[in-house]
Image 1 (cartoon, one colour):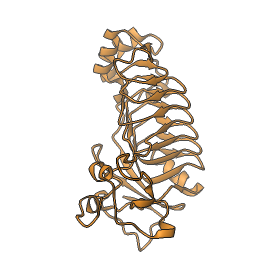
Image 2 (cartoon, one colour):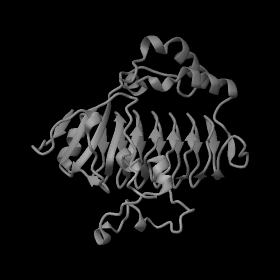
Image 3 (cartoon, rainbow, N blue to C red):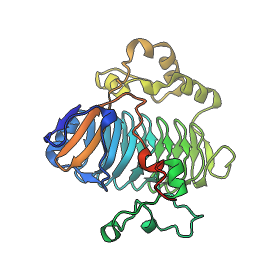
Image 4 (cartoon, helix red, strand yellow):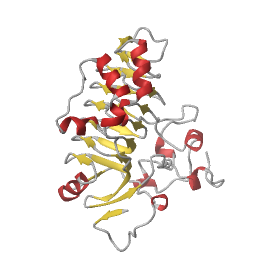
Length: 300
């Protein structure tokens, strides 16, 4: 584990033993942001990291974005003024500005939906802690939805992603869309809704069925294409048939694969963070810890 500016009260521990601070968001100072570049993470000056960030670099988060409890893979970026809480983003995905994903869940069957009567109250400064979680929180362990965004996905500006949806590899989400259901791989979507039967908002597909099947089989995003291009090599990116042929017959011999350098970033304050190497399948854990979820003394 790497600890930037370690303190005696914060010993270096294994990733599984880390206790995450329940912070509302930490904005790192310039020295810490510069150090993180060497670990494949680029953060603009006013990016907020809340709770933790699981990533496999290179990853870029742009100004005034909030990322909390998020997993994001290589060569993906989130543009400015976006909100991502929980969920995961695959490789080579482009997230435009003012995108919101991972919105709060309120239990509509309770007498009140206010979080003022829950342990996660925004008013603890006034009331002190409350020994209560909702049935939804106990069941899910989270207070927000959990969306999965695939590889090579483009999400336009001002998109709202609701629910535990899955956006398939290669999908395009048009600006201003509201996504409430799964989006098939390589679909072009614009409007409100989603899912295979939502003909109204699926405007088409990027490629033919056969080409989509080939791309999903080949999983070209396992390769470090930018490094290959930066070395002066060429790829038939403008010719989908030629690209598929290259990926099938030549890529395994000439293209380097993206290394699996997954890390867990846990902010402590503006100048201090823990950075732990982790496995790709490392579970970053729920927002509500098990000792609270399954405590019989904590009421619904």
